[in-house]
Image 1: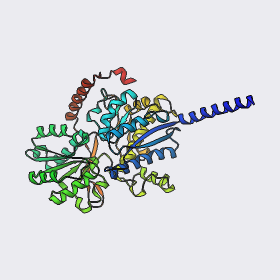
Image 2: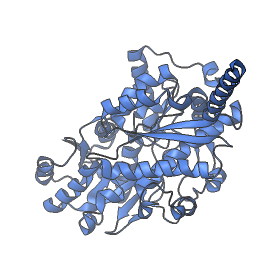
Image 3: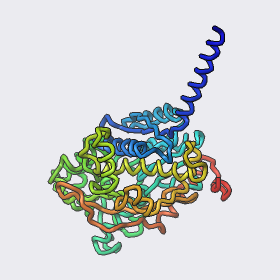
Length: 439
């Protein structure tokens, strides 16, 4: 009887060890989402794209054999709920690989927590613009671009259309922005450019969630700016377009940031949004890309897709897909240093994100030909690329209407350095040493 008990106990222990080993073979990606609330129409396709890519990685054998696990947590785009999700998920399933907050407010809060927990943050196309400086922001990765890049590129495009920077002199440019850390981010760059080129910058805040904009558009009707830059998210964007239509402000003189330039922003306005321009964070709608065909064949054809088949390839779906691809590729890069086929810790993954080397050949092999341009990061540069294009809504779909632009480093680099130094002084952080860059 005693022998049987010992055997059973040993079997139980082995079973537990076996379970732990099975657990340890999984790379855990927490997924912060907002599938409910005022921002859900924009949050849902992003989340679906993100999760579909993780499912696709597993369907193809994982990250060099390491299976991916993930868990969603609903933030409702609220900073306090985002922090709760972070705390709940950071230690699960062997520990979080990386967090993507999908909110500048949540990013600001987690920037304080990530260094202590040794978990990287990817904030692709949002977050703190100065976190490009990896010498101060060791754990933040605003991969593919920041709001300073976005604002600079939109102004470059407007200046080009008008015939040069000198043509902006005396003009009025209105920034209609979400009154939150997200909406305020582009202001320092726009102020800097307004001084350089002598245009008048109107700053018009819109209260969350943005369904009430009568006062903002009354101001626009009275002041008659030459251009409107829209820094909105969720229902704020379609509301702005409807108000522009009602006010008679020409949509072709409106330019949205890349979070105000997707299908949910325009589809309910239809022809009323015709001519409206938005920035594309490298990709636009990409229904013909190889990665989209892979997702449709591997997941959706087998009933394993996350959302409706029709949204696969749409702008925000592609944004989620790309965000997940960058998260996975950082782990793959880390495995090259710390062990192929091994689960990477958050700290090891951080090295991978700091040493990303995605050339065109690698991107094409991943199915991202025509969707993404090369991106490589370093200790000093946690952004890696600043490419963007403009696309325009024709009443039914988005079409690219510009060549590629890059933001102007001559202006942005000193701004990043000054803001990062200020942050370091406030938080009593020392700049990283060359030795730390090797770690």
